Image (cartoon, rainbow, N blue to C red; front, top):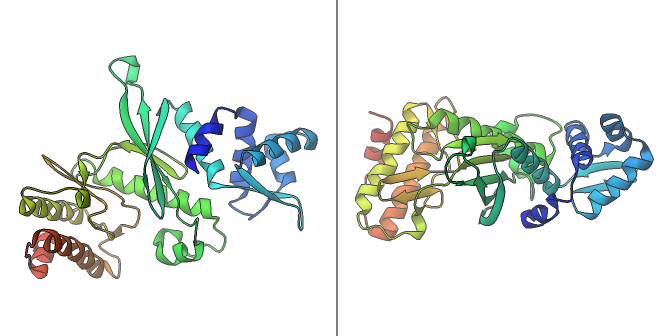
Length: 295
């Protein structure tokens, strides 16, 4: 659990981080990284590294096997620790707060970022840790195009690819499309501004027609840039007095995708169905599709 990582994070020193990094690198090619490879990366003797490996295992940051050889792999918690270490070193964050969101494929935490040059007040940000593949890597590989046909991809590496993909698309969409601003990205985690407002499904709207139109307008702006969200719903749309923000983009597709129209239709259908169900708003799917596509 991420809260356990935060508790043990201060117990880690640079040598612990180097060991976790060595295992991380080795897992790109091996399910279980041989202890000899970890020794080679860290330049530590077996006696020295053995003590630290036991410590990290006790902290539940890695696991090990002795069959058919002594090998190690890091848990997501170990990967979390590496990402947090990098964000702290870069001064991207200075403190971590509460868990504010948990989904099938991500965990989101509050954090604090110190102002640049020490001028001004600290600002709130969020850290999103991707969790693709934790429960069913086979399903993730089937459903996520960015995995491709790689024969060996560890679960944490799948999460790393998803985070990079989301960081890349946010950078391409912002600021023309209303998405949270990307602040930093490392491994399977991204740091962003806090989304404005509250989630659509938790909010009672006084003018639902205006917000429906605004959501479709944002989808149109994304489409004009060549992208389709491909997972739109009331659960990844924030609403506030001035507009909307759309989150959770790692499964986006480009217009050249063979199922682009089908995915766009599903996105729009999901939103129209929500507004019809909650507010009894009627909107024509074909007209909405044509509007988003600029036709």
